[in-house]
Image 1 (cartoon, rainbow, N blue to C red):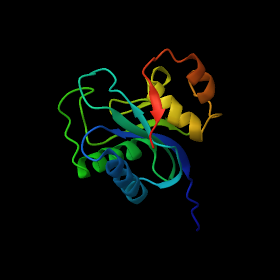
Image 2: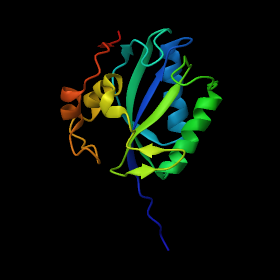
Image 3: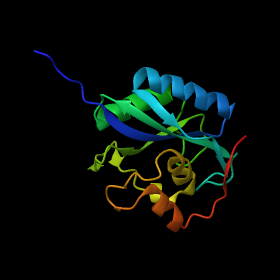
Amino acid sequence: MIFETYMNKAYLLTGGNLGNREENLLAAIGHINQHCGLITNSSSLYETAAWGNTDQPAFLNQALEIETELIAKQLMRRILKVEKLMGRIRKEKNGPRLIDIDILLYADEIHNYKLLNLPHPEMQNRRFALLPLAEIAPNIIHPVLQKTITELLKVCKDELEVKKYS
């Protein structure tokens, strides 16, 4: 009997504002490839002032497209493992961090688990998530709002400046 593995496509947002931000995002890519699935596309790096708790250094963010055999809950557990492996310590909500990895979209699935809400419940309100995602997946449709990422970006009310990082 032959079993076919089914690959799911997910979109992640990595970010961080402590330590060497570029090195941390690069390390996250390695860990995600090793523990979560194959990264098939990545956005440029974007720099944004801190959102929410604004008294902290600016963040670097990057959107990643991955193909994974994991179901959404398994992927979330692996992502939390990667964050821990990289030294993430959760002290305060929206506080400074070495690494943050969010699942923005997982296939076209909608979930409301304690550990995971999909699609990410705030992505449409955050320019720092939409801009890198629009670079690699402009025509993906948000499964709840039924708008493309480009359409969501056009109507996003977040006014924080998000600029490409060189």
